[in-house]
Length: 181
Image 1 (cartoon, rainbow, N blue to C red):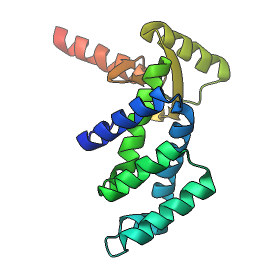
Image 2: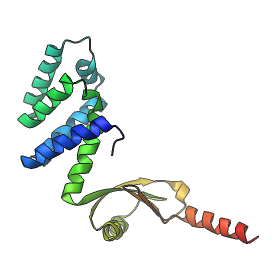
Image 3: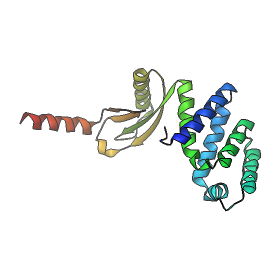
Image 4: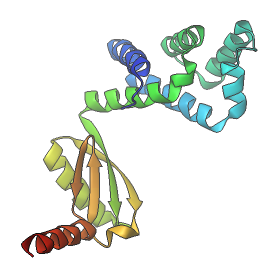
């Protein structure tokens, strides 16, 4: 989750409203799209965040985006509120917190798995099953390769790290040997 308290509050409020209105998935998609658009388009960021651009013009940009992307009225109102309160700069953090809330409501957890080499589909399925058993939730996995691990995997789930790498095992053996000397 993002470390910006104001983002957490806005994400929590939107999550509650979207859940009440049974619009979690469409709102989630729109918020993810807006966050990605902010990351990818300097022009969009400048148009919406620049105080030199009149508020009326920035609202018109949001209206155009809402029309083009088919945003739900709740989401459009939310984005307008962010604009009016000068909080659009936190859209990435709000999107991260909102996604975490959606995952929690759906009984999912996200995991980042690093391995020394790319995992095969069978290995990935095995890692997902082990993490699902440990967490009791459906696991969505994002993988990466870190050759420094030598072998094995390191999984980060929420605030927990499950380290089954050869690098860590070698480090522990080294420490045990040095401790005995």
